Length: 343
Image (tube, rainbow, N blue to C red; front, side, top):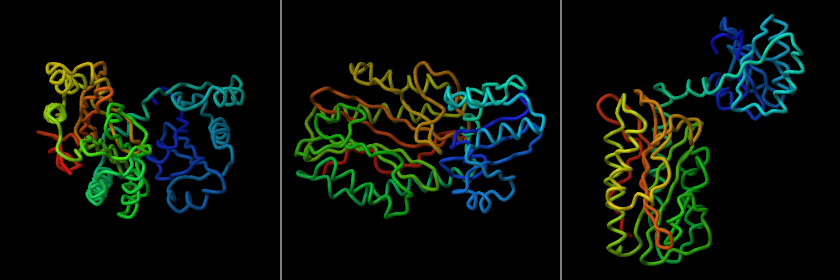
């Protein structure tokens, strides 16, 4: 926001982070001198007045227009805006409103970067989301049996999360059984579990706005030799990635710690996605752990470590945990065993 008179914050996640208001129609004008004006419409005005009593409230249907007019009236001509969120049409409308009397300045990802390092309250909420995820997963273990469909299992798991206190699932649960396990983001369907399947479940609970992310792969019946092989490879790769995730580590080096191990075992082409990502008010947010990503891990950053091996036509394995980077070693917030569960 340096060099601007004020920042117009329109990404709902960033508005919630800075004010506490969760709304489908809200924006925040944050001036360089610290003055803040929150705008929302009449549907959320009561909630905003209650939950954000220390912030001036402007009740408007068109929140962006209202705040830009306010900025101009206050003599704030250089207005930063979230160019990663604002559409071309909305930008054009605001530019026409200013009409040469000021300037809209793109802010890039500077506001998103504010959310990377978590405070104590955020870490507590993330931990609770992860606890609920593990409790719900444990509660439905008996549904890993032949005849239960992917869709039925996903529904039972998501229901268990809500019953245990989640606001909702953090994302649509992935349940990929048998050959579907070769599709990293398979949509649960009608395929029933069968004896001999590996089943990958990628799930998470959302609690007070914060998202958990955990993946486990289980075996239904005695696993074949090839299934045990790729499971042990992924488990070791994940352990290496977790060990590499320390304060000051390069994003690329953390990725390489896991990816190189899988590649050296001959399965490099079967691990095609990044090693992990940040989690918080979004299920996928900065930082991004990948071979071409620049940056270093900081203390109190929440990330996932999630290597996988996916064999088309046969199946796959992914193991994922949500971690908090701390001095010395990362702390895992997801604690379900990483040993292969044979059910």
